[in-house]
Image (cartoon, rainbow, N blue to C red):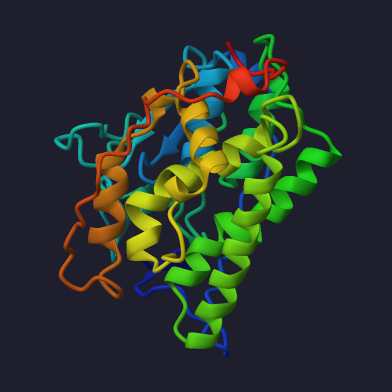
Amino acid sequence: MGHFIEGEWQEGFYKPDSSGAFVRTQTVYRNPLEKEALFKKRYLLYVSLACPWAHRTLIARSLLGLKSHIDVAVVDWLMDDNSWSFNPERPGCTPDPLFNSHYMREVYLKSDPKYTGRVTVPVCWDKEKNGIVNNESREILRSLAQLATQKYDLGPNEQVDEIIDKLYNAVNNGVYRAGFATSQGAYDEAVTQLFQALEHWESVLGKQPFLAGQSFSEADICFFTTLIRFDPVYFVHFKCSHRRIVDYPNLWAYLRSIYQMNGVAETCNMDHIRHHYYESHRHINPFGIVARIPAAYLNSAHDRWQRFPQAIFPA
């Protein structure tokens, strides 16, 4: 889980701040995707099926009909001191189709031999320009939503942006702030904010089908990729143990409603998710023991569309 400094690999996990709080490093590559490049199949997405940030881009690629335009390379679920690796022998994983790399960090150096920063996924690679275009999940998600020709609008607007901003600190990154806290105070603050946010969205989703109202949007994708990992992983592994998602009637039905949309379930790999967290984070799970989880029944019936017949979502 190391990082690069001027192209030199340094081992080590994220350093907390002086209060013991987890601080996420900012991504480096922030260039917009181009429509011509997209439809000329110049882009390759490097992803992990375990990673909630990469999962956002896979859902958008599927829902927006972009699977034939953007190829995908899938890293192994295990992240060790050498970062993400390629292990095509593992079910669900692929080799690196461009460079036959063993580690994802090699791909970063192909783009910039003097790169400084973390090795993260997703990564959008331009095969013609031979470099990384973007490694910020929110921006890749937004670009795909704006460039896709499929007749569904993921609703990029100020309201959606405000919701995504709120979700990020309290929920999406909030589970990591709880799990990677190194002081009681930092953990308590993160968990309090997390469950206050979940209570808020439980109330909102009792009145409308989606976070921004009647229409499914980018915000729902960002929320979903955290929710689906919550009970199997975050509740136990990150000590987000006040309540499970199944204990929130509206959140639980909402989670199932999105999972059951055409094209979403195929992007979800619970084996990768569980094994990644429990076996990669040895500083909080030293023996790499993977917790058993009850059946989630993600395909069980829900009443969201009966309650909200005006809901608009990808068919």
